[in-house]
Length: 225
Length: 259
Image 1: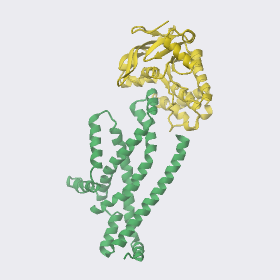
Image 2: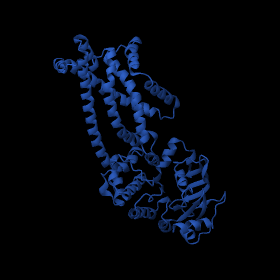
Image 3: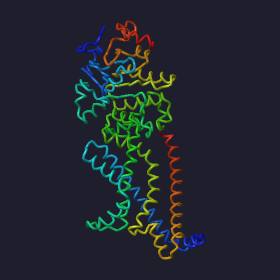
Image 4: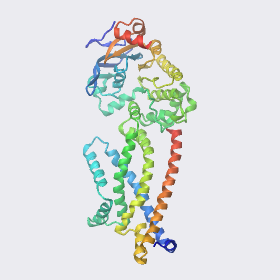
């Protein structure tokens, strides 16, 4: 039997432990989305360059990351980089792993955004004598970013959940904290349920907030686009 | 009668200096040959109107002038520079001197009217912002839209959008203006306001190449009318010659359908 009273009790008595996990999880998700977007943006732009070696490298990167498990990527970065002499804090290594992973997915999202920009916009910019760079930064990117932002929000929600694989390398994110508690109190179901409920609240609230933001953006979009 | 033979160069015929020379221009999309050898001289200050059935190649011809379409063969010489042979940077510089107005306006939706107009002077010509804004305001006032300065394009009517698009092109101080069916996407009641702006531009001496279905405009404003059919200039002449005394059966056919 699941003891619901016990679920509540664990939540209340170990509140600070869970909150420490929530803090790490949100921190990871935040930095991953922030740096992952920047990486994804560069990858997406490089994939459009005429310089084919760069294009091929970027395509291999995206295909490789999307075609291998996140956990394996995390293990390679977190244990592999120190072996190669990069001695960084574990949390930093985890962010690197998540950013490398997320960057590939972001690159796809941003690519779709770039492709969504109307051909007429590009022709107008061309007809005004803009160079490729001027065209990219003044015309294409601002429009592409607007289209991509909702998907970036979804990526934030996804990373809140996916960062739970980091429990395997002992980062004090939410899943690890819950698992550690459970292995002491032997209340696996109750303790992990607390973690699951916290995850749900986080993603639910984040999704609602993003939806609100998106609606507001669309309203200004009608005024703007 | 001026019918185009392979080596026969159509000349807009005014005394102004030669601005654009188009020689043996061909363009194919896959197996479809859209332009089959165009030879044309455009003189400074002339207003050329290109008419013809859809698919005749008139838009493609216009878009080849600023290389939005890359010709398969032949050349376009603009102010003594071969556009088709230009490197990247030369092409940017050439395009800065050729304004273009599109059927679908193609205003930048994320920028306010003022920024739509000033973005290229500021970024491309490196005009100081105050100077660019001053010029933009003058031009905008000339088309009667000074009160739309801070609006986004989505708040404008089609006719207003197209007038802003014309101003955006003019802000680069072009030597020629290319109009690709500028009124075809407009509601009928808005066609007039755009044509008025174009008429004034023509009266001010701007060199213009206009693809249009507005035959009245062509008759009133054109110095020279080109009738394109099936990728060649089938017939060319003054508005009187083309509209009142068309020589070619295809021209007569076309005019009977549209007039």
